[in-house]
Amino acid sequence: MIFIYAEETVVPIWMKNTYIPLDIIWINKDNRIIDIQSGVPQSELIHYPLGQAKYVIELNKNQAEKCKAQLVTKVILK
Image 1 (cartoon, one colour):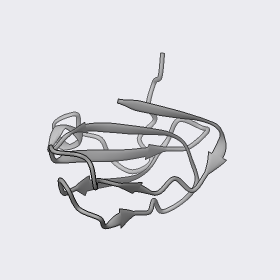
Image 2 (image 1 turned 90 degrees about the horizontal axis):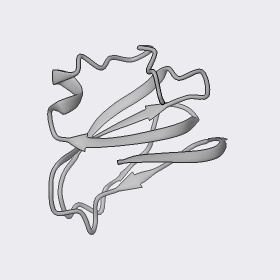
Image 3 (image 1 turned 60 degrees about the horizontal axis):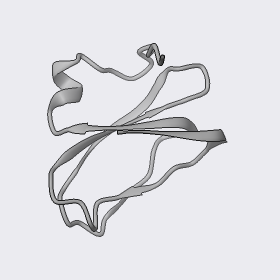
């Protein structure tokens, strides 16, 4: 799933009503990855990114690593 915001902002994510483990990727307005975290299902822990994001992508757990996603990697969004 991808979330698109009108402007860059700090986008906290929580997994309270999510039943599967996810990787969370925050991307800035320059399409660079600014943070990657793994979320635990049903957790009330709030995940805060390292900076402001314009996009947030949620993937199944371990997919970020399989895609070789890393900080500052440029992402092509179409």
